Image (tube, rainbow, N blue to C red):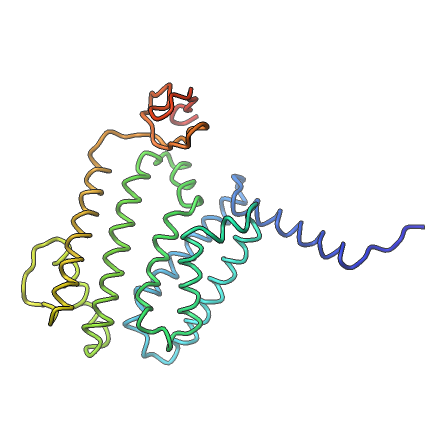
Length: 267
């Protein structure tokens, strides 16, 4: 006669099955996994759109309801990714996990951390580090545009972070769409160094903000230009040293000399 399973064993087995299912969905390459990953990316983009629109809609009656709904989605995604990971401790130490944790904190305490809400747009940077997004590019034969896409996302993230910062600390008196557009206008004019001069930030803090924005913005534009115009390279981690970018026809790793086996495009 079989002895009944203990509750602890059953719970452990159920947790193991859940982790296996999540691992297949988040990291698999099956059609079902691809559909799940694509849906996750679309939801992430909708969340990012909410973050961008926050300054305009934060005074509406439904804002808190939306805010806490997004917090629930972000929390569920963080927990699911932890369960899907083979090394939870390593995942928790990654910068993207810290960014997502901070974003969740601002969503749970929207009033107390209102002045830091502009940093929520860093979710866009976090998304750009997602393997699912780039697997979609690879499946569509767009792998060579990965580095340029990274550069564009980094630039967009910086633009919206600075816009949120400028709006929060310099244009809050003109709350709403007009104030946010003024902040975006100033940011774009400063980053591109055109400096129209009709919108400037007051005081020493304003001048320092403009200086930092120009320096970092120029660096990001240079990075984007390099990604667009220098020779295309493939992403293939070297088994020996981990170097990821190589010439398309490379036989040996240029860093350590290890023999490479880079698959041809389309294989």
